[in-house]
Every structure is written in C-alpha cells, then in structure tokens.
Image (tube, rainbow, N blue to C red):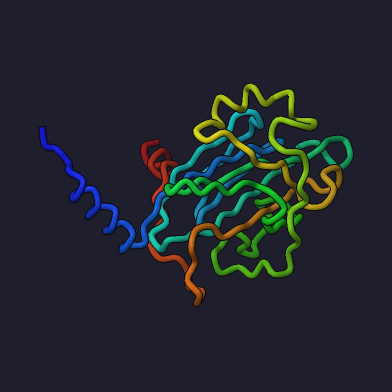
Length: 203
C-alpha cells in the first residue's frame, strides 16, 4: 500500500491554495420550505424544517455567493416564518445565519425574475436580515433535538432569521458572499460542483 509522507501532503495543500479551489458545506433549514443557490445554481431544496438539506460544493475562485429562499406556508400573521442556515469552509471557518446576511421580501420564487440569486446581482438596496432566536431557543426550540441529528460536526450556532417581522412576509430571500473574493469583483468562473448536481444527474 502506497504511503503519503508529509512532503507529499504539503505539496497537495500548497497546490490547493495556489489553485484557489476550496470546498465548503451549506446547511439549510426553513419554516416551511426552502431552495438554496451557490453562484446562481440551485443546489438544495427542502420542506421539513427539522431536517436540514446539506450540500457540499467547491469554490474554484476561492469564494462563492450564497442565496437562500424560504417560503412560509402560513399566510401573514397566522404563522411565523424562519430560516436557519450556515456555511462551513474546509479550513474550519463557520459562517452562521445572522444579521450580517442581506435579506429581502418579495414575490414567490417562481414569479421572481430579477436574477437575485446571481453573483453579479446588486443587493445594495437590501436590508440586513432580522436576527431572531439562536438555534435551540425560541419558538423552534422544541425541534432542536431532531435537528441536531443533521446539524452536527460542527454543531449549529446559527440564528433564525427573516426579513422584517416574521409574521408579515411569506417569501424571503437571503444573500451573502463567503470565502475570499478578489478586490476587483469578477463573476465566479466555472460550473459549481455539488452533491446536489450529482444526485440530480443520477435520477
């Protein structure tokens, strides 16, 4: 059996750094349903708020633009919408949903045609997300034990978020650039490599 010695491992790591390719994981929970995007490509969806979708993806340019859409199926003040998500980079950097993400309320996803999920979309007019309870607390706290079955390694410390009060809008969008973007903005190159894509291709 071939053995990998320290110099070989170091060369592989340096090659990874030089290429600018990094791996990351996107985990999403939403009340009631959600769709996730990386650099404009759909990579995840779900409709059970206690069961996270988990997507591994590459960042060939060292960064990625994450988009998350969440729909609250209980109109207006008859329900409470919430989104909980995080991104884990392969160097251990943990990026939770909180009030540093951009958020916007709008039409349902099928009716929205402004390219909000694309890397070059201008979200400067969006407000910061409304930060609600941290995972494990608040109105979703009773589901935390079930959620921890998928939100582990690492454990989630994210916050539930929304756009404005979570008893008003039913269709909410979130965006954030993660990783290390260049000082001169460029659109991420190449096609996103995701486990979602592999699963869809196998169907």
